[in-house]
Image (tube, rainbow, N blue to C red; front, top):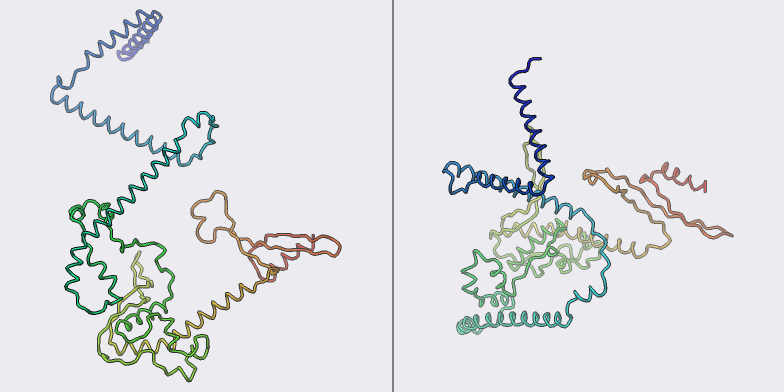
Length: 411
């Protein structure tokens, strides 16, 4: 068979590789020859590698580019390995701690006397820092208070402006003003004592719409000194005979139904502004269709003082008093039912059945099944009582009740 030039070349290459492999195995058998072979290989590799200073400008650019790519690849690999390690730490439960020898534990234990001493020193240093900070603000405000006391008149102090007067003598140090744009911790550390942090529990997120709208109007009238009470529910006490009476709160009583809520209006044409919650409709365009949505917004409204007073009197008598009476009556009846609940009454609640492992979509809608736990006690004449807890479906129609109760006849 005739061989081509490429086939003979590949055959010679394979024979040379086989011959070199046998030579390396023969050299490895003799340790001295193997060391000489390795030393020559290192010298040969050292001669082939040149420092970057001896290379040309073009080869220097190529080598630096290769260094940058290698470094970038190395950082990416480290980042991937670090993320995998952190993920494994999060999902891996903590292992059982190894038993520690008592002698080793005593050797590594801290000195209780030294730790107590350090804690006392830390408390003293914090106390000293707080003392000198207050003293600094006190001395800083001393000159400004003396200057203002000379300008004050002899009128008695107003209790409503007491808090505002206390804040006038405070001055922010120059170091805080200079570092205000870059150091937030320094600015917060010099926070005055009357500035408090907002808490999530201070928010009122479940208010009544009628109460809030009437309270906004009452605040506006109270600023104009037209009402004697600032609380909207306490105002019912001054306007009606009895807040627990159905006739008084529903504007049927002959004694108090004509009693005005707001009177003595002097500036009837004065323009005022107040807030109120309003349900507005907006049109949205999506996927080639137009649909209407409803949004609740807190808006501002302007009007004359006379119109505000007339509207407030009418709405307070016809709507708000009846609303307050219903709210108080429902709360009272609910508390009464809870307090008079007997212990032997049958109580059952619906429970949601959950799976040990489920996807996220199972949390929404009616994907989970529900079941009711029913507790029953059987009393016998000459035998001890028997307690049974059964599980039934959430249906409560007559057919479901008879089907559920039919199972007790088999017991």
